[in-house]
Image (cartoon, rainbow, N blue to C red):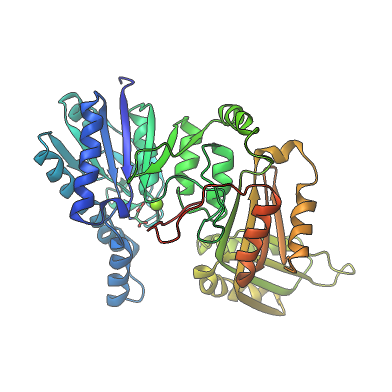
Length: 432
Ligand code: ASP
Ligand code: MG
């Protein structure tokens, strides 16, 4: 495949109305006229996916996942057909394809499917015929020949997977924000746009609440070496590059002069956590396995887990873990039989938890970051309820209503504060 191919992905706000579709079409056509072969991935328009989900729950309390995918996949198809029309009107030949037509093969786990293979021959054929190819994001066809979707935000993953399959130079993610930020500027007005970030840092950011790129898309990009350029659909400036660590480190080094303390790359947060605590778990081999197994079977995503050491042998232990708030009820239901079986004394759920995380590759070689995080939160009078770390991330679970204070305090303490501020009236979505 020739090396002058680019994948351009436009998010929901970038195709929300006719005017925006026309302006995306102009940007797409400009790339083609500059001599590049262009594959475009589109999301559903505006809040269309939310609307379709609401439609489903209006009809049924438990919509069948297979039918849910049939329904949700339509949003992206609408965007593609309309954009193809707009491109045709500009004098270029466009062809829109569903995920299935585009050769995106997934496993059978409806509403959260994983891409197994991309058979891009039809895309390549259309590119060879000098067409602009539009692919409906967020969907594929399963090995059982059913329509599947890739989880919320999944169009990013479609774009990265296609970029890998056609060996594109870059996967451009066009969005309603100028790039990835050091923090969410709606909380921290002094947040700065990040110029370059490594796959590893971006993975931690996406996993800890940054909504700008779907976690799986970053994972896929890292595994296949796809360079991502996350940028604004409304202005032409450079956004944020997500690249291999060696490249990111070199770029961050040259930035060091202008930024006082580059140890930390970003402060992310989440306000959608719930904590489940099991009190009186028998201190016997296999108990944790039963608990985690029940949650895994119910497809509840457990984030942090803490188990304390009981005061004496043979006395029961306590165990806490966090789950997305929307999954808290499913977690309780899944655990009910295990609670009975193991004779666990009580199950408590606290739905109002949040999480703040500091992320930076520099942490690997600099001790003392955790101490500073805890001290800064302590000085703010913010109680840390749970802690988890990775080599490049420290996360603290705190009360949900203290999350904004925690973000601002850490952002300032680690010297991330910049001069560029964002005007709050701008229609921005996800920054970090
Ligand atoms: N339309 C889907 C969603 O809202 C996929 C995407 O936009 O990436 O989650
Ligand atoms: Mg998105």
